[in-house]
Image (cartoon, rainbow, N blue to C red):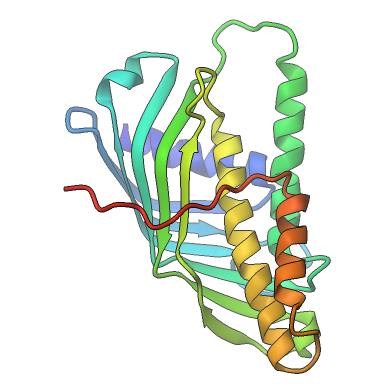
Length: 229
């Protein structure tokens, strides 16, 4: 199971996102419903110079083991700990924006191909809570004149993803997560530009709203998640 997950991510991930993906290891216990992924690397689209878009040391998840036998896998919680996200480019064209658009096009093509009922359709997913904590944003924006900044990333909390009977696909889940990361990075970029006097003070809010709109309202923000014992 562990090797299947690792190979699946490294094979299917690039097809969906259009960039290189690597995973050092996966550890899954079907009996306890616990999973851990270590060493996730997401590369950049062609034309960008920074070494990666996302680098993640560890992600953990808790799921309902019995749901693995059904058509929809129910994941109770997902936690991404201390990811490093690189934002390269401008507010209008960035590495994260390109990856997000690649995923959007992949999902659209998949839905078009599934317009006719097909046998053996892929499993759907439900995620009750998804948290991204302790992250940093490496800001390498064109509008900063080639300079780079390292900024703390606000924690991200998404809830009730795919909680309807139909659930969501793996690609749609990645799209929602990446849209949240993209929104956070763009706001950080706009705030940094505003502090440098190169943008209006309210740029962060305006640009952040535009980012969410471009991603198809893919994100849903909530308050802090309650700690589960």
